[in-house]
Length: 171
Image (tube, rainbow, N blue to C red):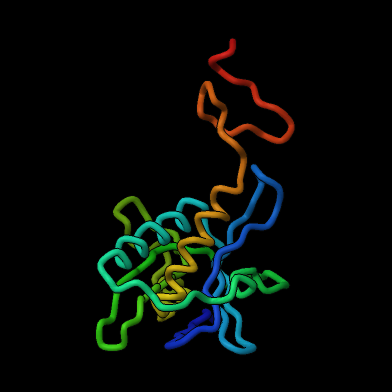
């Protein structure tokens, strides 16, 4: 049985990472009252969602208020309902909301067709409508979470692990 959630409104939509730098696991989370849906994702997916939302928001009026920063922390325990695959993003002018649609990844063959049609039809799905305020807060928070990882080496630009770094440019 797959997870299917559709939120016209949410109390929070956020990103968080669990683990030490270099071993972090990223999660997107939507919350409405006592209902919480968490989706495991890659750092690059989260950054891409924030970048797209920022481009959409640039064409819209600035929001009047920002959500409380405490709402941006992941609610615990963090248990992923599914692993993120396709992402759909858009804007609904009729209700002035930004749409974020997240679907579960499914295994595909060489032609990009699902290997298991039943699993593809039963994939997890999360659809959230965000206010402009929530979308702005998500972008700022996502930037902070993504950049909180390992610092880049000044010579090779590769990430420096907490245990050290074998820089290829330093022979």
